[in-house]
Image 1 (cartoon, rainbow, N blue to C red):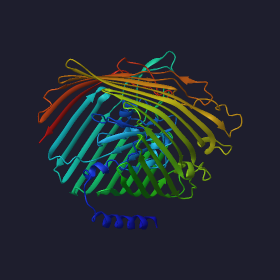
Image 2: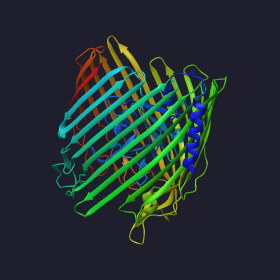
Image 3: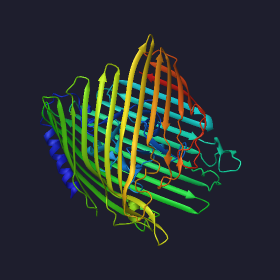
Image 4: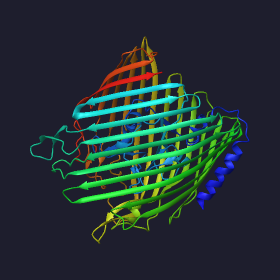
Length: 621
């Protein structure tokens, strides 16, 4: 029934679209904004140019804590004390979190094939979906309709047999555009580390850690007129990764194969005061985990068909209405399920944006979702920004949000708990932003309280089972500073960030729970980062220094892992002038510059200092 409703809305919108006049800017400008939060929310734009993976971008741009098992291995992110499944990943308006695991592996989430990336913190994630109790990460593509052909080729080679190749071609004119990209990555990851679990400690070589990945993307855009834009976007990733053992343990031959297909077809229309977009997408994911020593061969296949209708109406120059309808069907087949599982998700979102004469801007919104066999509440949100002073802005937001249990939480056999309730969260923030010429300062304080926190616990039946047992309180401060300056012929960009995260288990249903009042495991209280980027003529120098505070690895906070502070350095030389039609770049990167011995996850060694050599060719015709 929901699909019929969406279909009729599409027909109405199409007929409405052909009877309107066009006076606003080109339609792709609006199309790039329809999936983004209101400007009253805190949103961080991420620099994806010349970056490979999403984990690399987040590490150097935000200072967020990334949990990783090593190069090419599983990598997840923690935002404002929330766990990985409480961070939503949005691809061109569609949520792509795994319905079985609830999270995404950032190690195989590339940003080389997207045009824009942004971090939506707290309540701002509600514009696209629920579940972002920490926030959401948005990846999007858009055309520029520049006439000509642009070819980009890069080759990256380095330590541990790292060998990465990328080829991207963009061609078109003011009516149509095509983007084709293919990336191949390989690394043996056979680095040497000191095994402290042996007595005395021994230098050993990482085993069973090779990774291979291929990614292909094809986007086609056609602009029928300045009013109408049609888009077809496709992205396919396949990877084969061998999973290294922890320190002191011989390899068990673990390896994992991943396949992921994302595709969407959309139509966007812009009239004088009205913009709308209709999109339908198909998503396929396959994961095969094999442990030869334990005779484990686990397979998970998920498929989803999703559609949305989104619109914005300009009531006046200072007033907007936004609304959207979402509908989707997700199915999963897993070695851990007794049968195929299926879930329908439908949603309605309404938003009102108003800019007052006293330079106060506010946004009020509400989201309602209908999910198979799960009771869901209304999700209101309110945010405001005050531009009373020329250089200083004050912003604030409050919202309710929730995350529904995953398929594994509900249906895993044995252990799934169909009686689980959604995790319910209250989110709030208050911040200031100071902008002056070549200078930006942002300070944000936030608070969240999440009830019905889901945790897997051992049972007297001999297996683990998820339960709603915790109330988690997170509070903290985010600080970021950007400064641009020029010293004679040298242009310098400075960026610094610091995050204080106090995320504790405030209450528990488990008797005598030793974790009550304690910091959550693998959530550092302090993280920070500094980057320095300098350009002199055709030479670029970049230095990045990260700091990750110590983390507790047991719930009672008795055992911890020490802080670590890896640094990186890169030098790039442009062999041709900027205005040349063919550009050649050559560069070198040094990761873990000071050869620091550290671990992100307990007993999972990270590589010492290693090198990467980069060649780039870009041709514009």
